[in-house]
Length: 464
Image 1 (cartoon, one colour):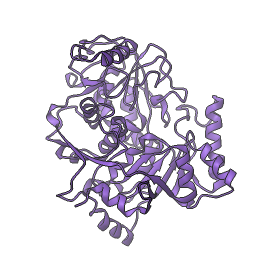
Image 2 (cartoon, rainbow, N blue to C red; image 1 turned 120 degrees about the vertical axis):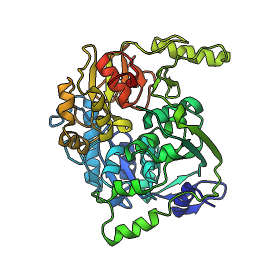
Image 3 (spheres, rainbow, N blue to C red; image 1 turned 60 degrees about the vertical axis):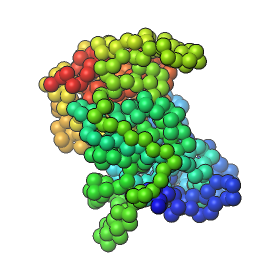
């Protein structure tokens, strides 16, 4: 009896080295501007071309500014990386979607929405959040720059087979509880190293009930538990989501692909190396209080005390709280916030903007808040305007920026100043992640929206 992971992995094995790694065929390689330059240089030095250039897609996202994208990038490092990706893609004959191209955006948002990511695929990118694509029933994981070169040269990668884990979330999520909250809850329970060495399959009633956008959010955060990746078995929601998209099979090819995709599920008697089950009704809107994504709690709860911690645990815990300016046992409700960020490959999709707008409608942005609302792609931006979400946001005092990774990480102009607090829908809250000295509180779009209109950390369930 095989797991979903087993079925896809085994189908892509080219060869297995005795007591060594597997040579795995890769269906899709995504490239962005940060982790690809050295790989292209390596190919150039060896005098070789990409083995299957039609399987490789390039686009800048980390360094792109979220304003005035029709003008030259001011930061010289960012400009060099973006320009280098464009020239490398042209030299090696690869698809490239540059700034202002309507197919551009965060690569982990564009892949699924353009039908480039499909069930049963193996997908890699020089970016840890490649796990996002597993939401469509694919094996997707981040790789290093030398591995990017390996895939360019051979369309294969040497990879050790990970162990398998299934996380079941049973029951129904409560009011204003989202996929982001589900993920932060799991991390709080399992820690940021709890899934190290494993590939996760998410299952259970609450997971099946998620929209495709919610599933993408959940799988995006798999890496934050230490997992190699995360995936969800494709179902009718998956098939409806991808049907008719730009790069999906059409006609007879669609029917053939669909028949295969329907086989992509774990067998009833499949055994996982590790398995956990959580109750969805126990999850409330979450927020982080520390400097790793596992330091999270329900928004009505208090920061843990240090009573039952070892001396080593106390040292790292208190160091984290000192950076954040918090105390053990403290509640975060009512704490003043300076910035709110809606976006990233975690929560930059249309559903996230719908949720944010649903809460701020009829309210006004708090005067003390600087808000960055950044679509994950130009397709999302177009849909925001088509649905009139932009009008709701503008009426409430918000502006929509241009697509890109933005304030998820300090590689572009959108940096949170030192000492300032940001409620962020992104994926990491490490020290300085959103700017040197910045303080990040990870949360869902609804918690972010509540903070944006009140100016303080607020339980979204208390607002109309």
